[in-house]
Length: 234
Length: 277
Image (tube, rainbow over all chains, first blue to last red; front, side):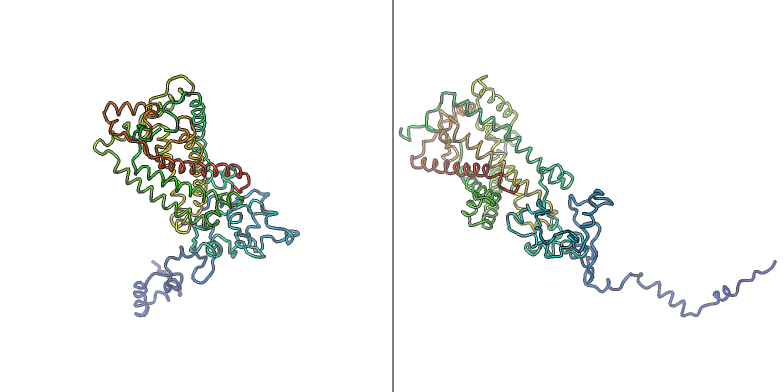
């Protein structure tokens, strides 16, 4: 039987290692598990995810918005194709640093010329708050631009809390530019509002449908009846 | 006619009348401040808010009176616990003296309708007519719905810690529609039944004075009077009519409430096309 000749390199590796090597191996087993960054271990912040959601910061670094809003907002659809192809322009405009880039005669126009429905909200109509008090000066960044103050990730801190002290992410999910709840489109945009509106309207209309005719008939009937119980009320 | 000559029968205790007058006052304040804020874009709304010190103060008044109403509702719930006849408990809830709806109330509604069309005599109602039971429970559940949504909106930052902030949109509309329903029901149906129909005209003083005239009750609540006579309790419930000055006060209070309500109702209806819905 012929003896097998190992290649030279293999024979070299099989040479016994110095005792220090085995000592290091044992020490390595006793050491803590691997970590990505020592920064996390020394920081004073504990709930990273919550802090990231609510401030838009991870440690000292501003982070990109997460794909999923921390509070699910009805009507804000997240998907591969949330808009129709014809609305592709709009889709792109929601991520611009200057949302009105390239619009002709932009400086001659007022917000409500192009956004008439958006001017009709309780903040504007009742509290006399102008568009710019929330949306800011020129250039107005798109809502979903990474570093826009209106980005849902930091809207509560940069916009809402200017007046509503202590506003949090959940608070900022209030829909300022609320769709009219009775509209069919609201069923898709804000289904809870649509359902609540029509449920309440059904209760109100149902009540009046029963009691208005009942009351009217009662009044007529008593006019035709000889009064019992004397005059001057009961 | 001397005021002592009229014989009247007790319907409401002083505590019940106190609950009612507190509800009248707070309901009218809430209506005026709420309608004022809702119609702030019109002169009608600005006038209403001006009375309470402007748009911002109307909100403050609305919130404080709202909290007062919620507290009153809590006190009323405790009061109910004392009024329930616990010895005959489940059965007592559905007795003739209870305001809890019974199947016979549905029957009462239909026989009442038959009477209106002249197909039968006036139905013998017991202590509570079905319309009165409806009024009571409508207010009861209305307080729960309006009170809870109102609290959510009064403290939006705090409440959005526990519920999503977009529920404020929903709460606003629930609050608004329930308020329109409540005001519509009180200012049209309740006022008509209590003041303007011929049987009660010019006003049913029962909720202020606590008593109704016996002839009137014999006609409108025949079953109740019959039951009291059979049990021999009719005599114990008899009272004299109130002093004419007190009666005058009741009329003034009742008619003030009615005119405030009608002002809000017609102002709201006429101005409703001019506001942002």
